[in-house]
Image (cartoon, rainbow over all chains, first blue to last red):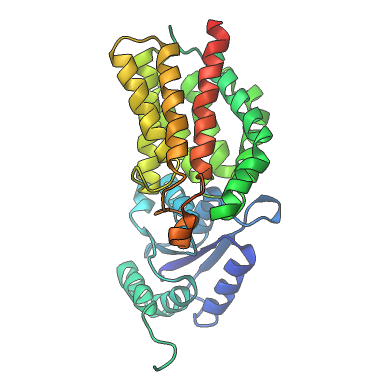
Length: 133
Length: 213
């Protein structure tokens, strides 16, 4: 098993794209679920869909949820609170940036790191320089 | 005087109509400092609430409020979904087991809703959010109730304080939500969530007035 990854964005296409990008880095052992977008092709997030995404990738090692902006966090929190208590404690909402965080978290999960270590690596990804100045 | 389930249902129906009428206005307020969808999202949510009410109206008050909260979480899309959803779920818990709500019960219910906003949004008064309407409105209600005012008078005090709270957001710089990305440029605009929250208090008052009248 490996930590499962959930990608939450206001845009369904952005969530799918991040999943595709992160999936390139992972073996089949890392499950990634993407969820995003509001009703009628609008931008938004939905706690019920996020809860379903968590359950799709849930395993004994837990789940890390990567989010884009503000209300994605609120919806993810509602989703986590809707889970059975024994699952809640194995699910974490990440402080990492969406793209870098998802890629690094997936790599870390693929080598069998614990949920807390996957989150720590994802957060560190936010301060990795892209260009030398 | 008590708040009955019929009045709660009238309140929800009135608010749903009010949101529909103010959909463009709420979205316009959100367009100035946010992601331009508050009216559209809230209207979608409360249209879903209106559609579900015929199936829910035989439930006790807490069952109705809980169903509203779940519907909003499922259908709203923006931050208003989890925030208003949490408000209604918390109000449902506070009203659990009660056939009708006394003044003190209504105060406890509204306070539980406010606590839900704080817990969910991690907001404080002055952050330019819906809490700037809720907090003074609930304070005014509880103060009036503690000094022996009846439901109608306490709700009049609450609606007045809600309106002032809503207007108090105009000069504020946003510290929560999408508007906080604008920094100082968010000042000079009334917060959309504070505005829809004022409508909710105003409509609770008018629902009670309708039965008292």
